[in-house]
Image (cartoon, rainbow, N blue to C red; front, side, top):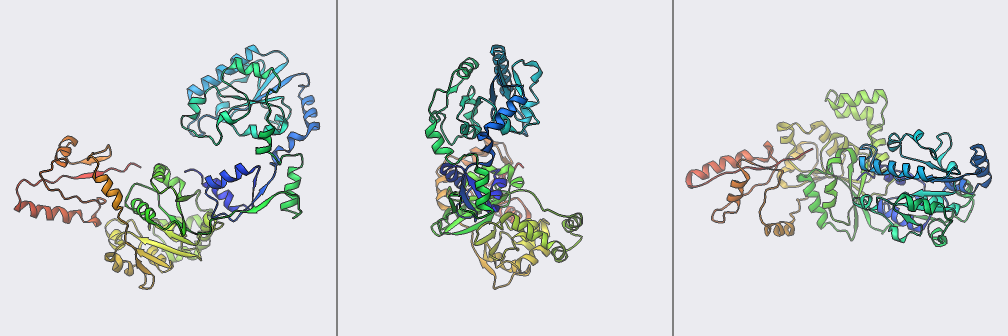
Amino acid sequence: MNIGNPQRNFLTADYILFPNEYTKRHMLEDYMMDNIAQSKTIMGGYPRNDVFFNTKRRKTLRKELKLENYKVWAYMPTFRQNARVGTSAKSDAYMLYNLFELDKRMNDNEVMFVNLHPVSRSNVDFDEFIHIKEFPSEIETYDFLNITDCLVTDYSSVFFDYACTGKKIILFTYDKEDYLKDRGMYLSLDDIVYPKVGDFNALLKELRCGKNYDDRDFIKDFIPFESAFSSQKLCDQVILNEDCSLPVDNIHGNGKKNILLYAGNLAPNGVTASLRNLLCVADTDKYNFYISFHQNAAKNYGENLFTFPSDVSYLATVGGFNLTIFDRIIKVLFRFKIIKVGLYMKINGKRVKQNFERDFGFAKFDTFIQFSGYVPDQILKFTQTDKNNVIYVHSDMVQEIKQRGNQRADVLKYAYKRYKHVAAVSEDIVESTLRLGASKENVCVIKNIIAKDTVLAKSKLAPQLDEFTESSVEHEEAMKFITDKSTKKFITVGRFSPEKGHKRLVCAFEEFSKKSTGCKAYYYGRQFIS
């Protein structure tokens, strides 16, 4: 789910440069750009690879570094974990073991330069090696890579770039099973032409023999445009509008209208369930549906994306408002209800609009739906479009304000007057919605979809209480009651908060129990973990 930054980069770009059709097809599909991006695609060589064709620079640098009489190898392994978690003890141990064993067996005219992720680098003391050194920090990575005679990597895309040199590439995949356990690949390792080795002895043997494979088809398929003039051609074509024979194309959609639905934080609650049920019956023959959420807010509930229909796309947003110090003061005053929404929007309305345009302004959407109906910032943000916009009302907001204080009357009154449609999920809450500023002209009733087929399918399953279910009795006793077919059972499902009316149900059961013997009441609750 952490794709907000690249998605936004693609959406805001005038051109997206791709090195081949394969990469273009998969990147547009995986980042869900096909129908909403207004960028143009351009096929060409990557500017960073120009240096690989600079033989003069290669000779000069080798001479400056006194490496003219050496076999120079580069090792650029993929980072195994992530920057927040760090490396695992296992991956560190494997890497150090292989480096030490290689170092012991290398000849004096052989040198291996290693480029590690900063987190991994902190675990390696290069002073302990004789023939293994760190990439020099004062030289740009690809500039230095150009002087090497062979690249050793594993699952990194760097070998696509290095293939421009025509020099040997070796894939050192000693931990293939562990690495692939929770990761996927676009290409199978078996389909890649470069030799794969699993231990340092095999690696050293490959390093010391010449290029023993034919990668011409690989180069033709994946780097057909690379040359010494990639940067020049790209600049001449996109800046000077000269025809440099680089294929340029629009991103072609399927012709359907694009609908964006803001889903809140994707928590396993009634709003998320309602959206899921709605999308299960939505007309995907006419519309493309995109679920939107803020990455940080939804980080604990990313798994819920797998519960939506597979033909629904999503658009993640990242970051917060870009504000001056004065703007921040106004926002804090608004947050603590010291100033009302009217004054806030008069002062910071420009910033709210900028925030909307930063997230969605470059995407082709026909309708924006604030489906969650909550969170003042998100409610106000979607008032800033000149396209069709809708806000959902999932509950009696007057009672929510009175009993829970989780909404703001001033924000709702401001918003309900500015959305083209205010969608109440039942007739019962239309009156309270009108009291909060909506008009009879823009209020409509869109009832929640009942996932009948899902309910019927689950009714055939054996009852169970999962680890998150809280019960007023022990689970064993609760299961005995649930599975007892001799008794009638009434089940209510709803958030355990005042406006859901559970108190009325309890009082009604009390009256019922006075007239019926053997009645029991149990409470089962779902515990949400943030």
